[in-house]
Image (cartoon, rainbow, N blue to C red; front, side, top):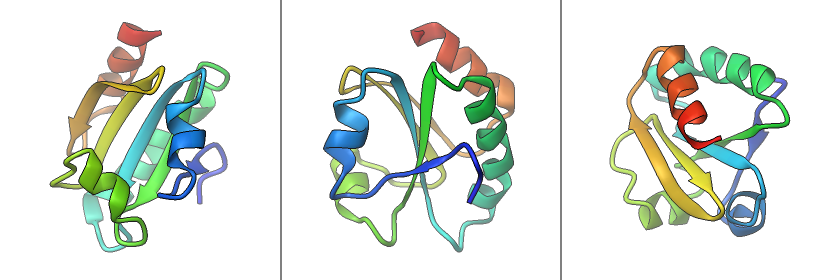
Length: 108
């Protein structure tokens, strides 16, 4: 697991993500997903660059089916940005790093 990335799960989602006072990105992924694995180094870089401003979590959809269902995650990777417990932005698929930076800056 990348050094700056946190792990989310169904049980702790409300506490870790929804009650966070920081902008929080959740990457919904699976072990078998090639684009998910390709996205991981980009998210790790972003987690380092935005440390203290944006928390980045990975949530394995196979191990935690409740949360992806609640947020209508139909394809992976899906990255959902939360602010004050609300969904404020979303990217589905693998995007270049700049797309995530733009998304963060829009909501910081």
